[in-house]
Amino acid sequence: MMQDDIFQKIIDREISANIVFEDERCLAFRDLHPQAPTHVLIIPKKAIPTHSDLTDDDRDLLGHMHLVAARLAKDFGLNDGYRLVVNCLDRGGQTVPHLHFHLLGGRDMTWPPG
Ligand code: DGP
Image 1 (cartoon, protein in one colour):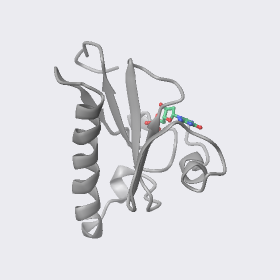
Image 2 (cartoon, protein in one colour):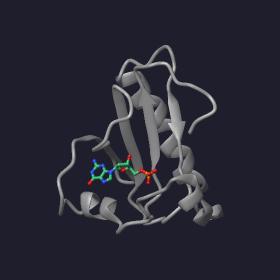
Image 3 (cartoon, rainbow, N blue to C red):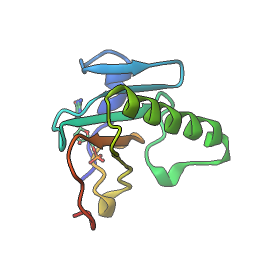
Image 4 (spheres, rainbow, N blue to C red):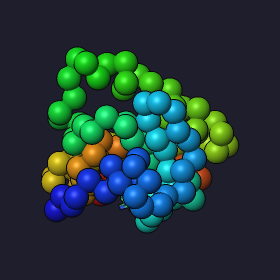
């Protein structure tokens, strides 16, 4: 079930988070419930609720978020690989209605995901 946009509150510094990267377009911070030794969320500052809301206007932003993810993966030493996940809407397991990439690493991943 979808909750409030708690990530907007993190952007606005209304609630705290362990922030690992920030620039004018995005923010990255550690997931509160890590599913791997490294579990970072990368979010746009623009309030895009879900992956299916993306438009042509978001092309550059998305490319930028991917480059930030790749850079953070290097910074965290995930040289043997990592997983980048976007959960979309209820059936995709999305709980926070603000687009986010999960960057997961530091252990072996399995396929198919749950
Ligand atoms: P998803 O299920 O894809 O919507 O992932 C939401 C993630 O957000 C989930 O892994 C837990 C994390 N999360 C939820 N609330 C907070 C919070 O207040 N702070 C942080 N750092 N992470 C949160």
